[in-house]
Amino acid sequence: MITFSKISNINSFVREQRSQGKTLGFVPTMGALHKGHLELMKRAKQENDLLVVSIFVNPIQFNNPDDLKKYPRDINQDKKLLESIGCDVLFAPAVEEMYPDKVVKKYNFGTLETVMEGASRSGHFNGVAVVVHKLFDITLPHKAYFGEKDYQQLAIIKKLVEMEAIPVKIIPCPIVRETDGLAMSSRNTRLTFEERASAPYIYQTLKRARKSNETICPGPLKQMVINMFEAREEFDLEYFELADGENLQPINSWSASTEILGFVAVKLGNVRLIDNIRII
Image (cartoon, rainbow, N blue to C red):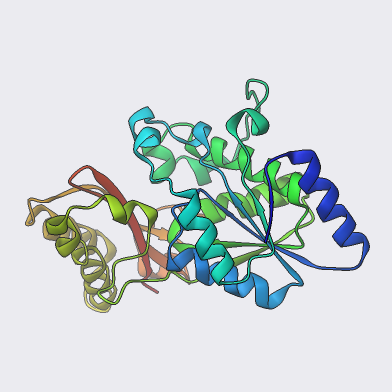
């Protein structure tokens, strides 16, 4: 595995690889790698000549400084995991390398960024878009792979590629779960033993919601989910939303869309967790 920390060096390398006709699959991460990340990478490696991974904890997508400070970091363990799946190229820049000047770029994603995560995390998706666009320009991938756990982020990135006419194909990948159903996330490592034991309740509740769509209308179903979380004092529900799978706007009828997902964000102790499930 070749490791780069400078933009100019990796950019020269990927341009040379492309000139030789090699295809590049890219997986951007913030490190603290887990099996979910590795599944993305394995697919990228299988479908391309070279697997390129970035590790960069992007400060401008955190609206809570404390969250940025607590974000787990273990670059040595990450490198071992990358080597174990045959990663070809790692790009691990410093903040000063990525942002030598103050970031002023502002994107407008319309209603995609005003609901759910966008409503509760001001500036988050602009920070995501800035760094992803920059990473695409640096690594010049043919395909880039993103997990569906961060479904709204995936929608924003698809829109970014469309708006900016970026020549990369976005590949969505299914959520990877623990054996008890908890969606894999770097944040899971911050859960206490007791919190980790409670965490599968999130997916259990989502599955209950999916099963109930046959007998309950969207409004009552939403209230059912809210009640289920209120019944468990260890959870602090931020939102549960039923939304169109493409434009992410809330729905109030099962006939409103042919693709409806349930989205949830909860705090468990001091850890904020998100998940989603396809309802229809």
